[in-house]
Image 1 (cartoon, helix red, strand yellow):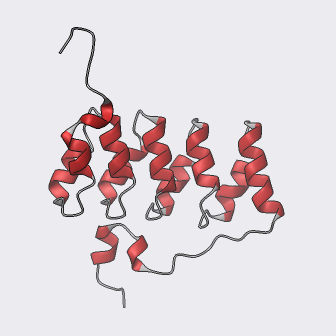
Image 2 (image 1 turned 90 degrees about the vertical axis):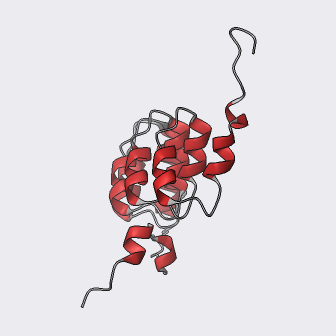
Length: 151
């Protein structure tokens, strides 16, 4: 490889590995620490992302990774509360477009300092959109899906 050039970010074999549905959880957690942001973005989009990986990716240095995570339907509400304070407008826009965004978070975004985020959130509030409740355990992280129901 020529000096000063590196491979394209998506060319890593870890990108394909990160999208493998049969990827063991332990290996998935190791890939969360990848230096390749495309690998982390691929992981952030997974519906079987463990809670620990979600927490790590919610604090990722890449705004693109956090934006993909913000759009993930399995994202837990406590991490929505973290991401709603993010400074990256892509993350905030991804949150505003969530159909299950809690009303409190939508209100907070309606008063954001960025005009585009404010307008998106206000439009949803003006339309009277109410957060759609999650209807299935499939939209929960694996750890929460696997727990026994409380009595």
